[in-house]
Image (cartoon, rainbow, N blue to C red):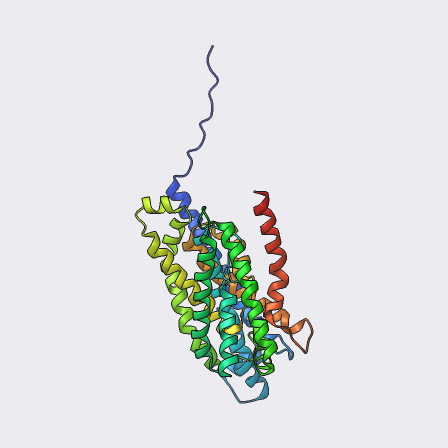
Length: 350
């Protein structure tokens, strides 16, 4: 009896072809993300207490005539929108790196105490020395964030098991509560400090000008650039220290440099816009659906999505109780707090 002829199955695509196809899709996704980010930026210029039309924005940017509407765009909305975009990008990238370094999905600069340390330092500087320039605030924010990061690492390393993801989060939460209490205490003792800083303390991009923005932008730019340079090494770190060392990675050097990057990004963001929470926690999880676990794709996606998220949150903060507005930190907390609870429940189940 002759065997029935079977139709040969088509050859599968080689791994290199599949990888190239995936990378092409991710590249297209980045292009779409940039277009959406630009759309959010335009919407941020259009919407607010006084809604404007696209023609007015074009004239204000390229044919400025000194009118009230043009002044609103160039001196209020444009710097505010650019600050929201860059702060969102910086916080999202800092959160993604923190999660990669700790291999903990619940980690973020605000969760592990870096934002609280930076905020305490800025409030303390205002309490002791009065109003200062944003450039001075940056250095206090860096100092506070650095000391908080060191304290969390030391506290999380206590015990026989050493530093673990759970102990890191617990140490960060405990330190955040402590530093926030000290910050509140200083604000209670000094009405002047409270009046100067209370809106900033809730997380806000309002009332900032181009001088403030440009004084902090170099630190954010350096942090983002170094983060992209380290993206391949951070991907290797997520595989575990032993595997990374086996691949020839100098893990201690990479961890130290990446920690400095996180402090640069988080500290400059706090100095510019206050301690805005949950952006660094939520965004990396959202973009992993598109970028995967490779940090060479994850970080650019996170930067774009973080800028979009904070721009949309700021638009919502402006129009939800129009003509008054809310601090943008409240809007991110409304989205981020339920997401954090969901992640914590998933981690406990696993």
